[in-house]
Image 1 (tube, one colour):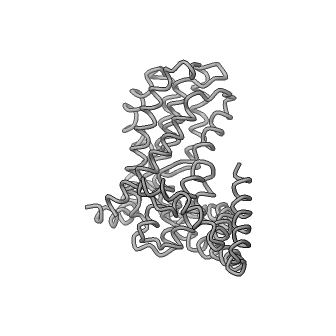
Image 2 (tube, rainbow over the protein chains, first blue to last red; image 1 turned 60 degrees about the vertical axis):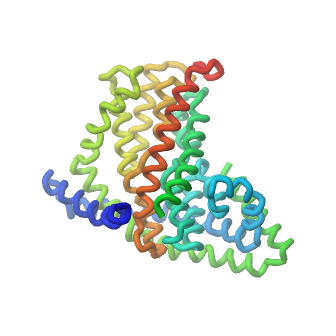
Image 3 (cartoon, each protein chain N blue to C red; image 1 turned 135 degrees about the horizontal axis):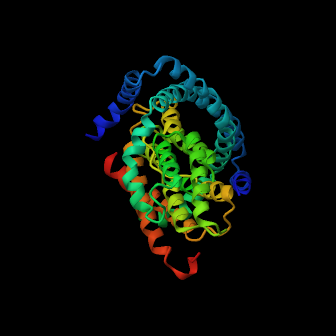
Amino acid sequence: MIKIISEWIIPILVFIIPFYGIIKNVKVYEVFIDGAKEGISVVVKIFPALVAMLVAIGVLRASGALDLLGKFLMPLTNKIGMSQELVPLALIRPLSGSGALGIATEIIKTHGADSLIGKMASAMYGSTETTFYVLAVYYGAVGIKKMRHSVISGIFADIVAILSCVFYSRLFF
Amino acid sequence: MINYIWFFMIAIGVLVGIINGRMAEVSKAIIDSAQTAVAISIGLVGVMSLWLGIMKIADKSGLTDIIAKLLKPTIMRLFPDVPKDHPAISAMIMNISANILGLGNAATPFGIKAMEYLQELNKKDSASNAMCRFLVINTASIQLIPTVMIGIRASLGAKNPADFVIVSVLSTSTALVAGLILNKYLEKMPIFKE
């Protein structure tokens, strides 16, 4: 079932969305071209962060520092069933979206996109938001100074998301 | 914040490299990593363009409105403290719908608009309960089509670039429910009063 959904999701979306567009009289081809134009600029925007984070993680890995951190956190990561490789990603995710993307990319590249760790990293990146950025932008926009309980609730949601990722990944992959 | 983190990642890496005598490996890793970023980005351009094209069709054909219609009853129940016909409701719905479709750039303006409307009801510099709830929903926002990650996985040779979506959607849903429950509990506590 899971296998079928994950194999079908891309072709179905690529079919259903233009199909619905045709029904609604949208000029699907022209609109597609217009949207696709933005692809390069999105990548251009991501690229510098990708370089910065791939290099930083590359240094940590090649020097042996990542192994040290992993050994240090082993008691904790073993308890929750999380691979130590994912610790840096979990730590950076709420702080920087592009940074987390860089780290996730490095993990996927090192362990393979179809490995358990690679899939966990992908799901982890996809399931949490840049909590601190969201809080700063939205409260900043309307001049709110006291964020009250939203900070704790937001971080709690991040922790739950990361633990759930580990749990569901082990269940499904 | 991220400035210090990035700096310390490199500083610690170099220091440990010196101690372990692995400077040759570190040196190679630095150059290789920078080049890897180029290879990944080139692979990403194609997939990103594809999804942005498809999502533009979704946007233009009003698919966002359908999701908005489906979400409306839930949002109204989640925000009993916001009047039913207040524009804050529709701005929040549009924000959440755009997030679900992975239209991050479209979601933020709606989100800020929603905050402005919520602030009209609030009028203080301390966040209202509704604002906190709205932001928890935003920090744990479900994304059905995580375009960037699908692109990255595709460019790194995944057999099935979208296979993680089920896990990520389930995890976010769990986090969303957990976040909202804690939020509801905390909003009544005296230390967090408005």
